Image (cartoon, rainbow, N blue to C red; front, top):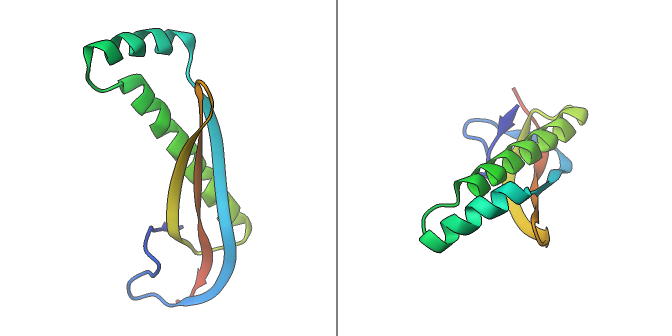
Length: 105
């Protein structure tokens, strides 16, 4: 499965657009992370536990998007994008979406 943020794939022609595919996950931080990252916030620096949490969320959302494209028998996902937003205090949604396509070979 080719996955790209571009609208085209070099040297490949899009034969058919299958539609939008998306995958999402909602991740909650734990109490322990809140305490340790709260102290880090006071001292300054990267909040590594939150960075890791968002990386896991992106990976899950991307895999779910790929799974949706595979159900459509797509060859690729073009124009992939990620969006993250706070759902409630302590929980964030990560959404990945793009366009599933069939390619000419």
